[in-house]
Length: 162
Image 1 (tube, rainbow, N blue to C red):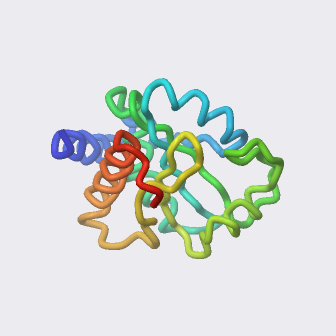
Image 2 (image 1 turned 60 degrees about the horizontal axis):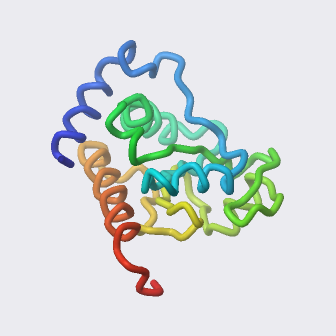
Image 3 (image 1 turned 180 degrees about the vertical axis):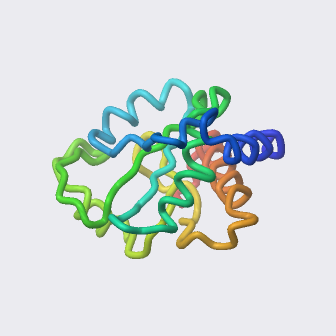
């Protein structure tokens, strides 16, 4: 299944019109508590892009990997994508329902380098190691697939306190 998803992502990355990448955006994080409640019945995980203004690697990750994932109906069943800007004071609600800002949430999450991707469960628990930087462009989609798959496995597994 992961290889099939990776193929779809790679194909869509090369077809900007089909993927919506021509003008597409990831939804900014506004209310993670509400997102978590919507994710729970589907057993979905959330993939958060921590970005900042002017980050060309963030744009590349968004365009080549994340927008195609967001626009893939098969991914939508188990994956929700959000974006949080390290340099934005836009208000948001964290997973616990507390008011914060994108900048503060990013700092609390330990996101200091952009792009950083983190996988969360509906309760805000981090489910995979963060992907920091763009890494190797040729394998980035595969790294993202693995992180999402790891998150989904941990979400399905009984809590082990990790």
